[in-house]
Length: 632
Image 1 (cartoon, helix red, strand yellow):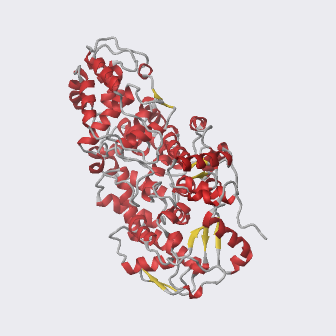
Image 2 (cartoon, rainbow, N blue to C red):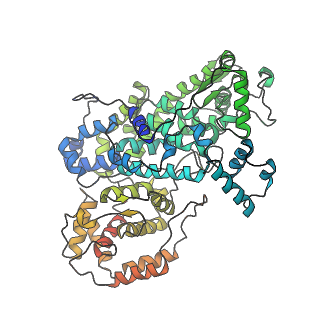
Image 3 (cartoon, rainbow, N blue to C red):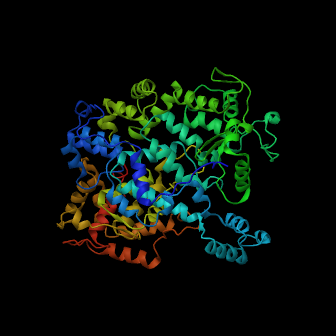
């Protein structure tokens, strides 16, 4: 019997080689794109334009990076980012240990990182426990003891550890990768094609979804990105297309016919691929189109990887039939994607005015993907969403129209669309340069980058993002997080952001450290006013500092600012609870709040020291928590 598939095992080092290899390295001296940036026409200086470019095409400038971009040329920096092939030695070192799952296949993951109920199924399959052990009531002491013993003996790991690796790698990649635009776009496109860790059926596949479907395609053709997400197990399970089969079972092969009585057509993915992924809610499709797309995608499911439960039985059934026979019957196996011809609706379909003849099989699903990926409504919807992310919450009609024209001409080349965007004066208008509000994740990462902070415990970043309203990877709706200021900014969120700024700067977040004195070349400010001015220029380069300093000066001179913030924090809602029971950052204990308040009552005398509770750190924390730092 021929093997149905192959499992490749990679080292962590090989993983980074693989993800960087998706974009070929440019030849020395080669210019891949001719780019004209009309920032001078918009009234920006070269330094201001560099700051704007870094604010929008990265997660924030690191110390000295703005001058480096000006020196090398904005166009050259952008070309490097569009090629996304810069070496990432520091990032690789930080992820050299403790990230084994990043190099695993889906098959390895689902058979290693498991939920308690899955562990019991594995135990029964491997004859490590009796079947009656599964009948023990969940969450009892006996149940937990059985699961813990079983995991140890079977070399299994809790799925929570998989989630932690996924979360931690996102933080480290965003904070330390030199290929910043690729990281920004990975965050953008994941949110666009959102899947969630909250759904049991898809949670084991989210890591490889970002790694294999999103990250390699963020700067390529939109059609490739759409196809990769459509075929990935995470999306197939998250929006239920894995269980969508033809309502007409008369054509099903009796040897492979479904045993589930509740199987049938599921329109969840068909609706979302049109409403959220491509054409938009006002794209001109009808409910009939949704149903027809769902019919065209019946039989699109995932190859059963698991060694336990129903997945194991399905895999053994496919192996018994054999690869050659399956292919002869129209089955398609591509890695973790499986097209089951016996589950497909073979009837004629009419989608958006296009007739799909009967018997189209797998290829008609591919035709649907192509049709949607280059549809004019898709071009307009995607370009507006990109313009909203990179330019303004309300991008101009003219800018979106010009980007849309390039999308259509290039057949969805994302690089070309981004170039078209930055070549428009609208991108550089001074009134829009600081109009976008950072999400909590962007806020925390920009603070890390602006201070050269050393993050030894990336999960603390997740905890603070959750407190500020962005529990990334856990957003349940397929819409993803909204990308507008109104969603992120309100009185409560501003308080949380100020709390974060102070906790971050005074180094009360475990596992995150920075050196304030070093950021100022080991020069100590001589007054509160000077400290505010110096660190405003460091943390907010090329901004109009006068008004912001005027607003912040009363805060940094208020000897009770720490006590007031602590009191406000006591009245604020409790931190977001982590329902996965992962270790989370805690609020300050009572004695710690008292210490902070006591420290804040001391006169801010110079010279400053750069210790954890130093006035310098408090000044910097107030700047990071200020409205101006929230803008990008």
